[in-house]
Image 1: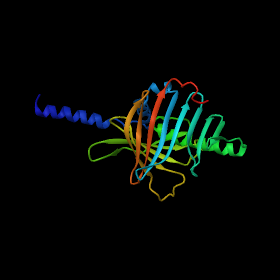
Image 2: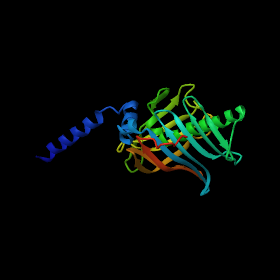
Image 3: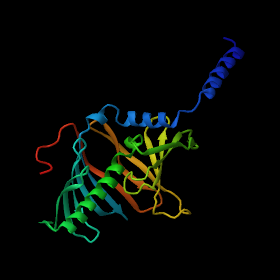
Image 4: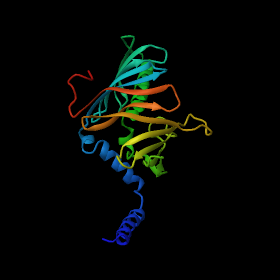
Amino acid sequence: MRASALLAVLLGFAAAAAAQPPPSVDDVAKRAIDVMAGPAWEKARYIAFTFNVERDGKLAASFPQRWDRYTGNYRVSGQTREGVPFEVVMNVNSRSGHGSQNGTAVTDPAELAKLLALGYQRFINDTYWLLMPLKMLDPGVHRAAEGPRNDSCGHTWDLVKLSFDQGVGLTPGDVYWAWVNRDSGIVDEWDMMLQSMKPEERPIEVLFHDYRRFGGLLISTRREMRGKTQLIRLDDIQVSPDVPKGIFE
């Protein structure tokens, strides 16, 4: 083939590629969910993990958790803001359950209500950190395309802006941006503008590191907050279609 003909073919391919429309925001979200879970998501009934917060290289908080996605049964333990050890066993759908502080069962209705509220707060916050890329298509979640973004090395990300209906979660005024790698389909970054932040503040940039497979789910086990001395570690992860006997008793 003559050089001029070859050049024409190559230019034709380039033009065809350029003419292809960018993927829709829902297509981007669906691809990320398929890459990071696919059919394994439906089978992932039992999820266990420990939500660890590190500040200045030291462990600041740790919350071991167990969750039955099918029934809503949930167990969490750790320390309150005041440093009091607690444990909650509840159903996150009915928000009913029982708990203890300092190893003693809490029976006072008002105190139990506070403890169950703490357990539910941990559930909402910590499971979202664990599974956010898989929840972009949840009811009440609004998606908007805000990409693409490129770097000097030729990598491209499609930005998916996530906002929420009132009543979704505990802080529906939060806004997130998921950076979905166009080559891999994986979420590499998650920017957060929390409803508690001032409008002039910059979103918090969270970088996703150390992806591993657990029961078919691809999960980033270390989340770095850019420019801060804090990171989130997701340890002791288990994903299974079966619930261990007695785990919520």
